[in-house]
Image (cartoon, rainbow, N blue to C red; front, side, top):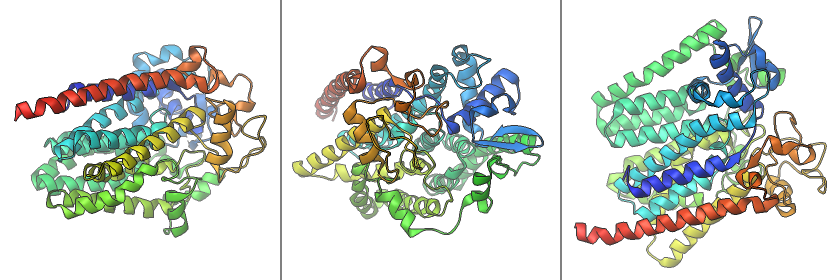
Length: 487
């Protein structure tokens, strides 16, 4: 299916949608972006010149560094050097929103598009119908918090996309490519290490030890790069930025085992079902993963993959529940869980595929559509939801919001009043952008650039999606009509 008209439509749909939203910066994004600028503009890993743009920072031997894993910034340095830096004033400490957007689109957006096409291809190869596979993939990209992190300069969806591409490479018996992609994912977001081990185990079970060895060897160069970076910045190849945090609050939380402790059952429940950082309130279609696991575990040809999906999901849930900052600060959902979302999306595809009754498929379509609607509103209104009480309400007309109820107290009231692009930006830290004059220069969407105000700015996106939807349905019908003749 790779390279087919359907794949090209899906790829273009993801890229165009990610390009629609300019999200501006923030502490996390600025820290990664500062490293990109330091590499390209100054030829150093030190971010001394940009340290005042972020609180997410490490210090060592009198200098300042990004506290993030550097792999993502290393990759982003290429598009920044090749053109995005033209939009970034060199004397401005803070990111220029459009320059940051270009780099985000060239990394997170493109990676998500490639991963969507790759996962669609793998699912069809595994026997899932095109319609079921397409619903699951579109649900993943647009109906989970993966959507938000494909439009913001974070490494979570970038790492998730690399792991999916590694998984797809294994199905094409390309262990070296899979190993390298997995290695880059790990040095971009260290929390994906358990998922990387899962991909390695799958490589061993699917292709044997010789290919698994090639996988392992190919994953080493990125790890070596990380070790050299750590040695250059912090004096030891095993010393990471999180061990030299400048902020006492974060330093204390990360002081024991990189912030990981005993699993917490209450946190697991919140990660699944709470408005605060839960999966299901924003992505109800993911509930279909449960029957999907059952379907996969029953069939001999998908049993190993089904077991890997279950173990990976449960393992990440248990691990992250013991993390000191499991909620991810100002975050949309549990952002640390974003790389594990494909473990739910794959069984969702199998569940939809096995639905023989039309009303069951109707329910599945409704759940996917509802998830996409919720996540689109969140991405367009405010994709980083605060974790602390603010001094002001989310808009001048609204009372102070309860951070434990972000959908009902923040997102829907803002949507009802017509506030869009309300992301907290780098110059309005811990404040709602609706209360800050001139915030439109930091976060905006294509509709606003065209002169549309409020929720009307979503209308061009709806039109774009309708056009892609028509083209995709038409292509599916052509493909379905041609198959009997091919047989």
